[in-house]
Image 1: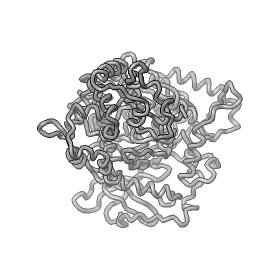
Image 2 (image 1 turned 180 degrees about the horizontal axis):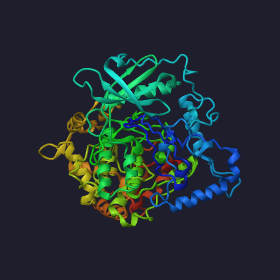
Image 3 (image 1 turned 30 degrees about the vertical axis):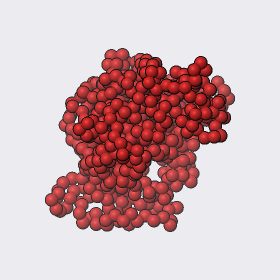
Image 4 (image 1 turned 90 degrees about the horizontal axis):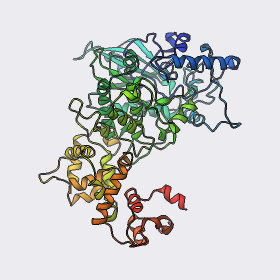
Length: 625
């Protein structure tokens, strides 16, 4: 739920082909408001096919294809959800006024593969209290189609939030500047006090729209997150929340510079590498801050970043925490939320954490650098299949003209395996971006998760990780050196549990208490009575999965195995290895571990060494059993 900072004005759909721009000039259809709460925003939700138009569909599809090919700036774009998800009408893809319907699809088999979109729409319908999500042909988000303004069906719900009820005493409400499905945004002014006359943005959420307990809890949690997340320059400033019998009022900083999306459009869809770096540094900084506090945004996209002023170099602010949630360091979320083109694969699999935000940042980076979306389709199910199965193209212009570091940066953000994806803090350490404007790498919550796994590992696995850490290059050590320095080691260059506790306290906000980050320290109690030097820290805090994505991974592994052979490898029987790995007695250890040990001398083989670095996965056990 972001903030709109200016009156909506007619402007083209940024990702639509030229023909669609001609057929859809109405400003009411592109009216945007950052009050949007886009639980997989249109076009993810709702398909409303007009049967009367199916006869001409094939010709229209051909015209659209031709117009896409002719587009000089957006050759691979499909219509953006940004300009339709805020209007009361449905998007052109689903509206009878748009002279377009869902395109026909032809399959080799009699039936198409099952679509994740159907399941997601059902989940969203339950979340927002919709009984018949497809009965309204005029609603962009189907679960909102049957709501009435009096909050029908919401009887018995407690809509009292405990916020102050004196909004009118402190603020003078001005003109509406944007409208979404869950509310609208207005300008307002302080009536009195030191800030008298200062303009703010007020998001007004009618209580009649809160038709489910989940919707009420979403509003409550949004305010809690905005209150708790304080102190970052790239985060929209929160003033206070109010309520009366009809509405909830969330008062925030007014950003008058427009959306990042507007700037992308003004540049013809492309940024230079240096200009893209300036944007990415700000996005990565605020997202890494949120992740350290235990907050995952879950709806990062260009529309949810606003510039504070019209100045070209004005500061960028993250907005719209309506879908955000607190997440513990080891917790996985399963709510399916976000926006179609920016949703991470693991979100569709219903098991994700902060890495999902980094995927969305990767999509934004791809758009900034080349002006097109990495995953394209005309239907919501097609978008999901592309996200799950397709790889983004780096062969079309302008990618061949961009630096190899820029391409590597985007590829490592868009890795479909969240374990292999960079974190936001790691992205700030990437060679493409780390030398830009004296960047300060923030503390990364990932190192504590990796240290926890290391502390619980067997002596054999610790020896393997120490061998691997000795093969790291200067570039790969940069991030680890920055993280170690942030833990403020003592004079002899070692850290203890107290160093970690102090570093977390120094960076803490109230959000960190909600996400119980400090409780995570209990898993590092082994450091309470001993010290960890930098060499051991590198072994503890390196990510084997991320190293595997590098071209030189095979070289890393071979060199590490040679070191392990000299210093850590020893003869071991399968039962002892199973005990070292903590396998339960019912696991068929000989079937799982038989190829881990050399038959000649009973020591770990190279294959066993690589598998030991990862540990035994549940997937491996499932295959055997």
